Length: 528
Image 1 (tube, rainbow, N blue to C red):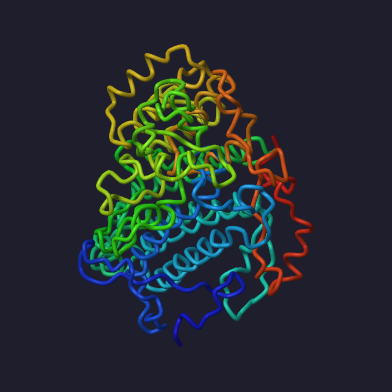
Image 2 (cartoon, rainbow, N blue to C red; image 1 turned 90 degrees about the vertical axis):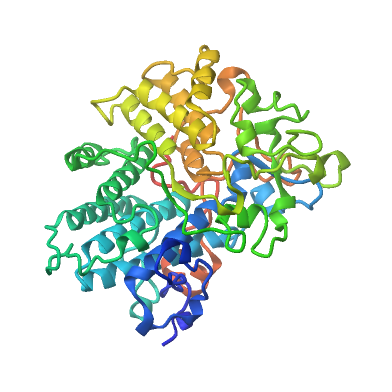
């Protein structure tokens, strides 16, 4: 049957991504029609690059609302207010695409896992397990309890139960462990083992990120584990020690500089990088709505256009010019939620969010999924907290993260060293020693460095800790709340609500979660 006839909710199986075609990365058809796929034409190998491209797409394009909440972006004053986003008074289908895109992507990887397993393709199966862990962890971080153990069964179970977020986290560690075992099976060229050449063919072509390099995939798996351990660090009884022992036993460490989890299947102006396609121009070369709608938040860039009166300007951070593009008034931003109609807040006066650090070669730029700067900051926090107990110091890991942030954005390590030394007494730049002072610097630098790149991770930091960005340097505490006059809360929401389709088609199970509130129904690790 045609795959597009399968019900596209978590109750069944989401539509598969477009399959990759051709014989090299530059031929990868990132915009093929998924409706042409049928059960008989599915090949787990050619699904992989399409699934990876879709992961990169939702990482780049699904978080506009969160960029506003965290103080990076705002709506141009040329546009009417986005009331649900800017007042925080949203309903069940606010940002439903996050739920849909994650489950759709998980479904793609699940097909790779199942068909790879059936074909003895251990590396493909292991990659799929790691990517499912990446996506499911993100679902938990945004929604809390979600369908997991009974999900993805199609007509076999149209009403899957909701599993507790903490239980899902714990099982995701096991999924990554299983992936590592699959990677470690004896390699027998031409044989029938799980990693036989015959059954793991074409990895160099179809694995757009690491070309089948299982050491790099293990590093990614460990980094995903570390992110989850950092999130759940304060949860009583969470198996921190056991999981760290497994990470250490793997012997490969984490993603390091130049091992970014990013892809470039051959983006062109006709098939652009997903960030470019969302926030600059479409395939046709026409400016997107978001190009005019989404502008700099004055919390980050300031109001006077000089770039010195925003949070980036407090410490003379040159990354300002890598995240934002000057407009008629330079780096002028707008307070988040400003009512429309002020001519000085029109889009042509405001800085854009299509900075060259994010898309250095325009439409042809690489698409990121998990960067080494984030990995280094996670390692620094883990070392600071005593989760990582040996090796490189927290201070050195922290400074390596700052340096990698600069280099990844197109600056130099020398620029980073200048920034660190010039601001040698600033608590959101200088590492103040293990403990709270050091954590403040780490979390602050994640805010500075992950702008547009991983806002969901910055949001997790904001929820799970007591961080108040800017407070220790006398900047207005933030991220700033919306100035929208209809704002319903003096706090930023701690989660999204379940989609309406779940209440329509999986009513009993979602009802079991009780009354869900975006301000009080916290994720299991949010116990600050």
